Image 1 (cartoon, rainbow, N blue to C red):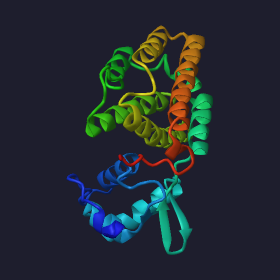
Image 2 (image 1 turned 90 degrees about the vertical axis):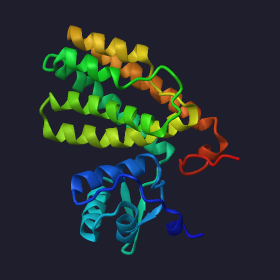
Image 3 (image 1 turned 120 degrees about the vertical axis):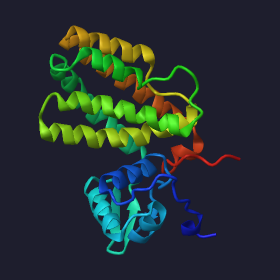
Image 4 (image 1 turned 120 degrees about the horizontal axis):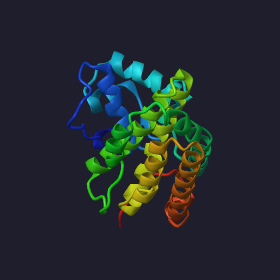
Length: 239
């Protein structure tokens, strides 16, 4: 059976709303329904997500500009690969940006709101459900973008949002391998406590500690898996 014939149309489609269509397609990239290095086209997106060719073309252009799709040739576009280099780059960039973002935003945010938002970013039992996993990762992205928005630097917000979309791809892989998140509830709680106190040095330290710990867990999971160590980072097939 061909790759195209195997594609299942998601229950939720983009319809006539380009923003909704973009989100659904980005979700498919995160959850590897559109797998790393998989070929995509206007026809594939139109059939898979029940959207118009114009919407598909515009979203492909947007995702290519954001480097979530890559043009191999004038006729071939693929989902961007997800490699160990991508993982290392993502963590390196977030270690540079995120400590400063949180430190600058701490005095601007509603502290009770971030406590509530933080509740949605963690889970204390094994994550068995794909939709739950996606919801948690989206909540984590929303939390980090929310902090960046309070710094009010448009370019920084753009960078953070793009980094967080890649983070979702990375953390999704980890969740599928381990049924848990690469960061802990204790790390999140310590960070929120530092933000509530507006303790800039402690905020920076907590963010860096959480990112370093998450990076170590993710890389350990990948290095320990023979299939992932040597190839594109796709969810491994089950024997």
